[in-house]
Image (cartoon, rainbow, N blue to C red; front, top):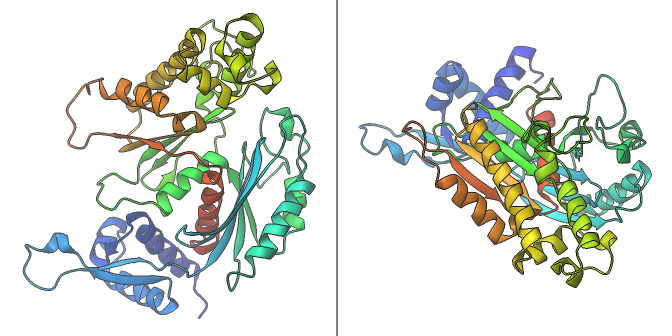
Length: 400
């Protein structure tokens, strides 16, 4: 039966609430959305009939109450299937997931950072992955693509970024040559979306509000506030790499001086490591690379573990700049959790240094629920899974 616009909105709101709470009763859905209990019951019955949700037992938190316990609802796995992809200077990654983020198939294609990749190369890789994935599931509903920049569906067909690497990468061509719906979004926005939809924590009172920091070539922070991505329309929001950390510091590519990015981004750490390699005859970096062009994050972290004084100072300063930034934002933004994600934090020494630095700092005021710092394990598939979550948000939930 065709739904009216209002019915679609109610359906979407209720399903979104079930996603973000992982398991929730009809009564609690009504309380948190303002939709009447009768309407929630009617629409949830439709969802059960559709097979998109399931009943998962009684609410054990009601154990002290007399009478019938609440029945919990959750999203049913394997209802629908999506392809998520991430585009980066290092790789193209692809995942086939169901509507709950369970990975069925994955593939990562690495490419040289000395060669600019084109949308034609990406399309070929996507087509090959989709052909193989299509043999494993009944139907693929949509493709989501996580981008190393921003996207506007009202203007440019290019990735909105100051990185010249992507200036010729044509997103419209990808859309035109793909037979199913394609959705684009910033890679860190996608990662935050996956935390909201696929990895919800129902026990947290404020779990729908969190920050997601990603450290890669650049630095970006996505903020989820009450299960909604904060200020999607303003592309400057979240460009945390370009806040001023040291006034009058090094000149950033954005034109300002002393940006956080010049202390803690992978691109700048690598650039400084190459200067060390060139300038010092005794640096441990020479054990891990035959030329400065070969210096990357792995060589830098290896020299850090060996205790190279200059490298230790470089990384310790990067971690300190990140710690100060997180603590400053914690004074402004209401978030129960702070996710930190980046290949550099897969190093236990680096992640421990960040955790200890933040945990040693006392809260200004005692709060009923302390904020959690979560080091999200880095894999090349995090953004691709996030892109699959974007598909769920846009296609299944019908959100804009």
